[in-house]
Every structure is written in C-alpha cells, then in structure tokens.
Length: 145
Image (tube, rainbow, N blue to C red; front, side, top):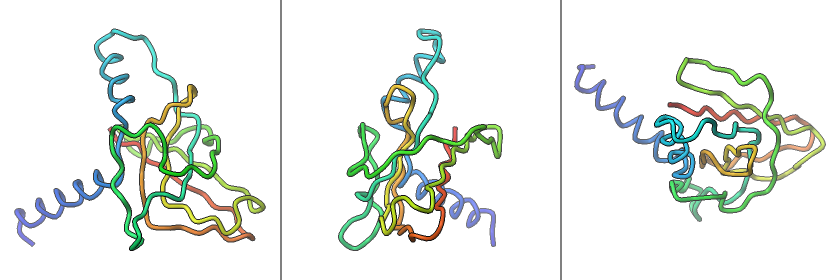
C-alpha cells in the first residue's frame, strides 16, 4: 500500500470517527475559555447517558450535531467508574457498567458524556446494541483531544 493510500485511509478513518462522535459546542466554548484563562475550571465528566435515538430507519447511525444539548432520546444515565483511564496522553476513557438486573432488552444507539452540572460534553451515535437480561453490559467512551 502506498503512503498516499495509507494517508487517505487514515484521513477517511478520522472523518468517519468525527462523523459519529463530537465534543459539544458548549464544552468547546468552556475549553476555549479555560485555555484563555477566562475561567479557572470546568466541571468534570461524571455520567454516561444512554439513549435509543441514534439511528435512522435503516439502522444506520445518525451524525450528532455539535449544537446538541441532550441525546435524541435518553433512556438511562450511569455514573462513570473511577479512576478514569488514559490509554494515551490525549485521550480520557470513561467507563460505565449496567448491572445484570437493569435495562433488560433495551436497545442503545447513542451515548453522551455528562458533567457534574448536567451539561452534555460529548455525544456519540452507534449501531444498535441490545442488552440481554442475564449479563452486565459495559460501555466505554473515549474522549480524544
């Protein structure tokens, strides 16, 4: 494979990743203010919200919009596990576990990171994942900077 083909493949992968996962405009504004020294802190991520409104009629993920302030249809919300992992220095990994006895047969297709003030920080859409009633279900959300 030529270096040009590798770059094209890498670039297309970035575009695809960005298509279904965004950092919200509200969080980008807060990050800009924090970086400029206008504010001293931003609220940390404390929850992952899950919903069932992330796909179209054909079952394909719908690209989230940076203007979104919520999921299309939130079903539940769980506290992120501590400590948060950093698989690489520029990525914060948030994980939740849905207990075996909760959300049986629920079909999830969108998730969002929510801060301690209830603001959505990032939103991701995905193909439908249905939870069985006899297993724990974990979700991982990598927030890349």
